[in-house]
Structure formats: structure tokens, C-alpha cells
Length: 346
Image (cartoon, rainbow, N blue to C red; front, side, top):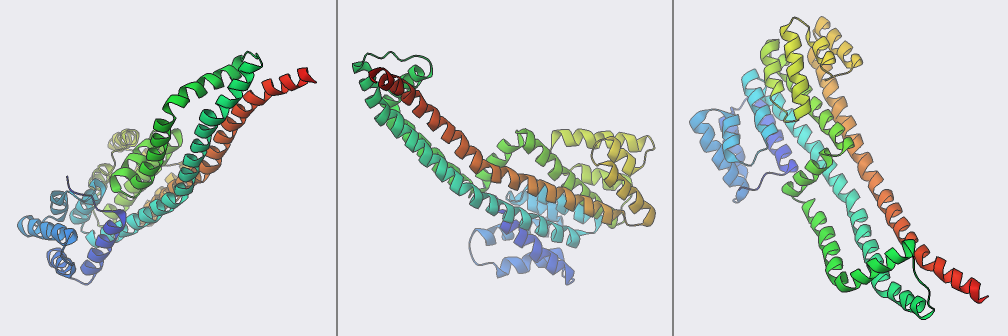
């Protein structure tokens, strides 16, 4: 399995190809120029494979697919660009999209580093507290003849278990934290993190927004190229693997076949809101539908980025509060019986 290209590498590739196409150079010659400018290494091997496939097939999307390092969205958008005659605009759009993704992931990685380190340190403190401090209190209470009940008894039982596995638990915690930090620096790790996040309620909303952004952008590009509505909708509909969104798109397609216009179909299918539907409707009447769809795409992307950043920003105080409460409960479970003993002695 080949190593997938990073977001920054995808952005750079799309930007260079867009500039080359804008200058009037053909796709085949452009890929050759990029390959020749690339120093020896994996990057040059990838471009060489793309060039050889492109020379044989003349199909950029098929050549990118055969390289096995470009994501499905990138390949499908390239196909949209080729079929609609807007490859230059598509590559510029992909450059901007993956540039934003790279900046966002870098921001998330930087924001998560401190909370993960903090989490590891707090767990280490808890383990030391449970395995070194709690046994001392247990011996004192046993000597005083105090019988532990409720939360206190539970805490002491957990402490007894952890004494035998404390090293293993500490190693696992440290390994988990280091693994998470390393994973965030790899494409596969970020994909796993993204998949886990999308299973959360807020994550599902973010995934839906990203799917809407991709769909709207592809539809705008296809319409801009002069393709008819049916083919444009078909091209854009195949760009997302979000199950719920695909059902909504299929519903919108059925409504359009029944005679409903695009704006009403998208609104009734739950893809866009009434305000955005009104914007699309006005856009079609004024000949600026692509502009309206571009605006919806950018709006959905911005909202998704904002939600992701909000989730990350909420992580640190949430972890700190949860672990502080846990530490407090452990200390209270020890101090209450001790205060009771002191009161009896007094």
C-alpha cells in the first residue's frame, strides 16, 4: 500500500497544475514539467507514474487513480473538471480546499498536543496517588479499626488492584498519548481520528456540512462549464460517501425528475436551508447560480471548520475538569473517614 499524499502536497500539486493549465500548456506537458522539476525520490516516482498513465490513456483522473496516492475526492473532482472543461478551475479549487484542510489539521494538531500531554500527566498523578498514597491510608485505617464503606471502600479496592498492575497501566497511558500525538502527524492517523469524530453527534453534523460543501462546489463548477442540469447534478452527486447526505441527494434527484426546480428540490430534501434555497433560486433567474452555489459551499466549509475548532478548544477544559473531579473524589473518600476519626478522638 503506497503512502497517501498529505493535504499540503495535494494542495501544491493542484496549485502547480492550475497555473500550468492557465498558461495554456496541456495537461500531459504540464505533468511532464512538474516531474522534471521534482528532485529524485518518491514524489518524482509518483509524477512519473501519472505521466506514463496519462500518456497512454489521456485521462487525468484515471492516471491519478492508478497512482494510488490521491484521495477519492481529488480524483473525482479531476474527473468533473475534465468532463466539464473546467480542469483549471477545479485544480485551483482543490488547491484552496486542501490548503485549508492542511492549515486546519495543523491547528488541530497544535491545539491537541497540550491537552494530550496534560492528560498523560494527570493520569500519572492519579496512578501514583492510587498506588503509593492510598495504601498508606489503608494501613492507618486498618490499625485504627475503621471499616471502609461506600465510595471509600470502592476506591481502596481499586487501589489494591492497581498496585499489582500500576506499571502496565502507566506504560499503556504513556503509549496511548504518544501514539495519539504520532498518529496526528500521519495521513492514516488523521483518517482514523476523523472517522472516530464523525461518529459523534457533533461530528456527524460536521461531516454533513463538508459533504454539502463538496456537492455545492462541484455543482457550481459543472454548471459554470455549460453542462446541463441533469449531468451537472449527476457529477456532483457522486462526490461524497456520506450515507445520509447521499440519501438526501437521491431524494432531490427524484424531486427534480418530477418537475421540481433545483432550489426547491434541495430544500425539500434537506440539503440546504430556505435562505440558501432562495439564494440559488434567485441565482438561476439572474444567471449567477454558480456564484450562489460557491457561496453555499464556502459557508458550509467555514461552519464545519468553526465547529471542529470549537470541539478542539472545548477538549482541554473538559479533560481538566473531569480529571480534577476524579482526583477530588479520591481525596474526599480518604479525608471523610479521617475527619471522622479525628472528631471521635477530639
